[in-house]
Length: 392
Image (cartoon, rainbow, N blue to C red; front, side, top):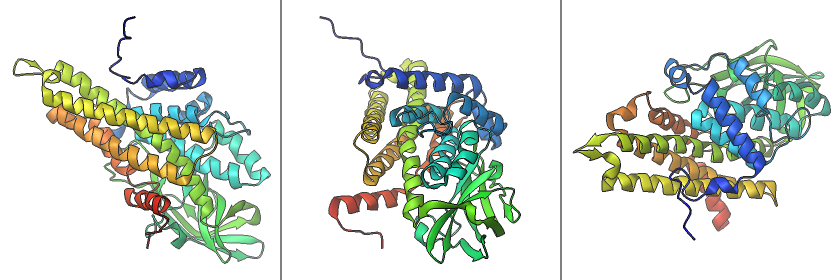
């Protein structure tokens, strides 16, 4: 019996591990990105903008991508594996697209779905799932990122209302959002609030001069005496564990998403090496180039296997935060190294936006540190493996 032909793009045959639903999601998102965003993404990145975001959000809503792993309220209720595959295909186009979907579904919508009142869920989730309302998630502050327990944004009682004062930083979707999930310190600890962005005292100036995630809206949130009714509080959100639970949802999407960026860089390098000739033969015929391509493929497919296993855990017996840290730490680190290696194969062309490599590489510099830096995930894993907390 002859051996099956090895597919250079999928040497381990991992795509065969996907079910019909996941393959349909893969093909649908890949096709949508190829038609709607890939022809423009390099220009958007160069210009530092994501134009027509409301239209793009509605398009994602029609595909069922927004909050796709949540149940009810207009959400698709699909598997964690299907959601992961969608994140991979989005980030294969650009990390900014996956970040938008991740913040909308796994942070803002998830916070309402998990911790919100029934009234909040009915008011916001169907519109957000359809892409008719955009949300953002305000946790990180100018002086507090890795240590959210020390945040300075305050919420104080004033009769039956809440008054919020503070600043949030590096907030995806902030300037275009209709609602913001804001985490603030109260006399009873950290609480979450659903803040309509039209509320007086709320503003979201956009952050400019980024060299990473340029095809993405990033903002500061400014809250100066923002008055909210008691019903704006998320009733189920108590303590720092609530926002961290939301972050774990988003980190899972990152585990998958970065494999898309790495795949895109690897494929670009492989195509270039096959076409570019030096010393009378293609780059792909040189041993050193082959070593680079092989090492990149090894790490890419090990990262994909990690993502697949975490998806099975999430869809089955359950997943531990430290296991998500394992995937986020490994997959982002290896995806970034794959992009850097791909850039060396392309030589000077590696820094050109005519190819996706430098764009993915720059984007991953942000993904490396947001939603948990390398150091924080290392310490989280260290505590899980040794039983000793070394954060302080």
